[in-house]
Amino acid sequence: MAARGCGGVWCRVLQRGPGGSCSASRPRRAVACNARGGAVPLGQSGLAPWAAVVGLEIHAQITSNSKLFSGSQVQFAAPPNSLVSFFDASLPGTLPVLNRRCVEATVMTGLALNCTINKKSLFDRKHYFYADLPAGYQITQQRVPIAVNGSLSYSLCKDNKMSQMVTKTVRIKQIQLEQDSGKSLHDDARSQTLIDLNRAEGQLRVDANISVHHPGEPYGVRTEVKNINSIRFLAKAVDYEIQRQIKELENGGTVLNETRAFDSKLGCTVPMRDKEGKQDYRFMPEPNLPPLILYDAKSLPANVNHQQVVNIDWIHERLPDLPSVKRAKLVELYGILPEHSFTLVNEDGLMDFFEDVVKQTQMKPKKVIGWILSDLLSHLKQHSLTAKESPISSFLLADLLNLLENGDISSSAAKQVFEELWKGEGKTPLEIVKEKQLELIQDQEELEQICQAVIDEREKEVMAIKGGNEKVINKLIGLVRKATRGRANPLLVKQILEKKLSE
Image (cartoon, rainbow, N blue to C red):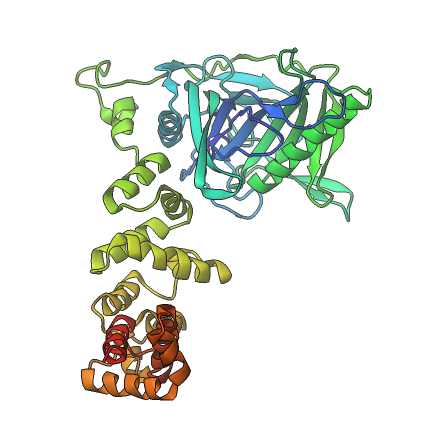
């Protein structure tokens, strides 16, 4: 990982095929991931299918109150240069002070990504000269980073079918802390560039290294697509670049070792600069930072001040459940389908909403999940809301489902109540039921009279049923429900009709 400014992460991932994307973003850290490429079913040359290798460097901020090496505050969208210490401005004589929170967050990320945590890691200076780097070097971890050799498993749908999930794994090369550079602000009107040293603006950034080759042959020449700022653009950039390289090679051309940029408007990559003269960053040990020493329960010295050390085991104990663990627990506890667990975990706040409803209702979880995914989630997506922003609280939905489960209302009436609740007018489900007269008819004699009236009006259907066509009874049930505006229990109506038709 590479932690930036206030702290960050980068990830280097190699991926299969022309499609697919990698998401390994924890707030503000840098992670490095590696994975082999797979066969790409393209090519007109008659040779073996193409294979793609994709390596991602994912940079992300660590959520912290202050920056990685200074006490300056971290605040998104703060006025330019309003949060800059003497060290951030690289004034002579200033020294870096490592942020404990950033170290803990990086260790946590390493544990979550199944990495080996190095108890001793080192800081290095990466030298290059650019306007947004006033010191002329960047503090990073080139030789011995905090975490190495991890893996990230993820699942995706096969043929776009949620019931057919495929699990894939990518390798994590390393996770390192890295100082953030400043931000260049280009003023085209005045033909000038300004620098904001607040650093770290809370934005994901990904550099993708991409090459193609035939299986069994050496890897191809790679290109680097720089500064991609969303997962969606990353997938498009990788797809395009793989196709571009295959087309270039099959037409007899060559792939240049160059840096490219992704034009999101055109949906293609464009050349930025070549890499023929590989830049020498002149890495050297950072003289102002000693080796970073981490401990576990066994190596922790006696009588040590726990506020001055980072304990790997302490962090591991407080690591929250990872998505795979959450999904397994949902399936085990509630008996829901695995594909439904993916939706609950992936949608912001939906898992907590579901569990809150289950706790407050008598309805079985397998039936609750239907309402959560088919009704609530569809409304949320339609209005671009998260579960936390839903106008229907978990308490109100549970109250509605209890009315349905207890036989007070029909399923169609429950849908009507749901729509009224979505309006957010502050009414309870029971108040809506009474106001709209949606409660089920409980009077047996009244239902029998309505059923008899339908039988008397539908001689053709009655004759068909008595002639052996039992399916026609469903039409009579529908007519009774229509006559009662959905307030008749269909099972009870069927029993009454069958009894009367057999007399």
